[in-house]
Amino acid sequence: ATEAKDLHDKFEAANPPPDKLVSLRAMAFRIGSEFLSTDGNKDTDVAVLRAINAVVHALEKTCMLPKPIKDDSAFNDEALEDLYRQILTDGSVDQEESKELLTFFQSTPPPVSKLVSTRANAFRIGSEMLTEDKAHNVGILRAI
Image 1 (cartoon, rainbow, N blue to C red):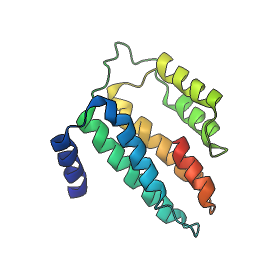
Image 2 (tube, rainbow, N blue to C red):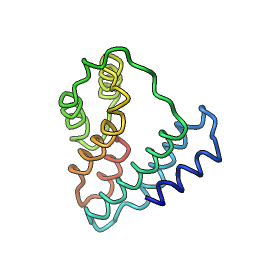
Image 3 (cartoon, rainbow, N blue to C red):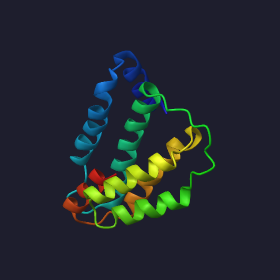
Image 4 (cartoon, helix red, strand yellow):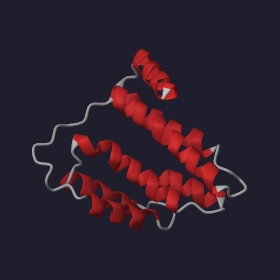
């Protein structure tokens, strides 16, 4: 909990400009991928994914405000989880899958109350697909 507070405080003090937020998130993934195990230790790899999720969460919670949604009744957690599984199965995201995900979020954006669980589900499902192959695991991380 203190690490999360430290991250929050650092991001708040740094106050990165909006055009840097995407690159900061990407940096968390890039650096995190360096810590994926080379011996196929799934527990270590899951811990790395959780750490990256915490960093990205702190960045987003501190520096980004979600767009208000008038009607959140169309959001379907189960459909999104199915889409995550479909996309992450092969360990990468192709252009068509990326468009499909974008279309899903544009047509049924998650309500503010579900933003954290929406991202956490991507990490959880990705964790289920980790293997002993580091290249595959890096692909999963990039796909997330």
